[in-house]
Image (spheres, rainbow, N blue to C red):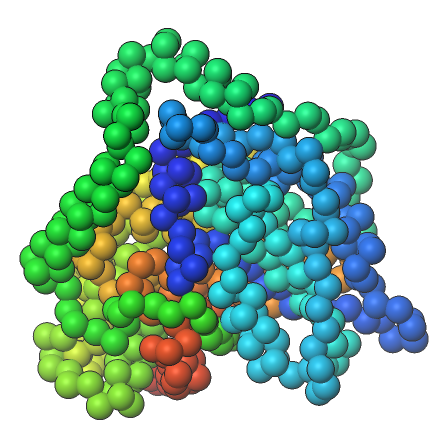
Length: 469
């Protein structure tokens, strides 16, 4: 089966660089031992078997991207005739003592590496050797791969709501013959013949002399546009915006969902408002630790993608899009109540001007798909121009009951969102089983003090809870 990448898929695919890999990460920490049992609940062979049984739910995970010869159209998805699941599912073990900090260092290294564009654009790692009989599963899926419509994130489909994995119909798959370059070219020419407007665009952008000239012109125009936007956008100077390196740091924060509910009830606001207020307070404390000059009017501008809900009559249900808006976080405001008030009013106003990205498949899921929602959130955030915001904060609801991977109970789940261009930090949040888990993905050179920011999240939460008592 050959399908053309959508314009947004193609832009994600082509804009990736070694210093800005555009893949969505998801880290699940599992309780992987049973008292008295010598073997782990989930081992490498069982994980391969589980993923193979679920691949029919995400058929794009067996497809790779092929470029059209002579650039006559967008790239296409084709079945990978050499698909090797053992290449995509890998095994790693932490050296002793197997601490959480060692795990986060490993995740940072794995998140730094771009995916192999000659194969289907995903990887999964079973990470063994954690203390207390735990293991972890880390997945990476390219942002061009997960669109919430025809493709979900694979970390979601391997989850079950009981220790006994659900049975699926056995769907046999045989590697097909891949199309040749000549066949891809013939298909592209046929499509162009049927779409004159598209043919004109391709001829304009990829004519006989276009390979060097047009590409160089595009780069020059883009550089000029970026310079204009940087001069006119008005976004505050911030250590959160700089050219990124090829390496990352990763840290996490664990908080209780009930604390956010307490703040919401006390101030009659939304859970999303309380999350943003906690993040704002954490950013303020972190900036002060760096001796950054803050006045009451100092703001950081964030892109805040969020899943959109509709009222079906009985209760809110997931809607068919993820929506994003720009919001100024009042990091200069010293009073936590005033910070929350500013944010509550701003989200109410900004929500009326949000821009959405469709995700029809999510509507038909039982429960929520946090990893897929984070992928959709990054897509939505990418629609904003460069240099118009300081950071991205994604917040996706997860299931509030225990989930399992191959029989092993999932204890924690952390998103690992990519850094967009000139962004040195991304905040990803997922609620799961009564807790809210933060994944902080950051540039290694710019954010050597990521641990200070992580600790500041707890300080900010305590500050708001103190007002509620």
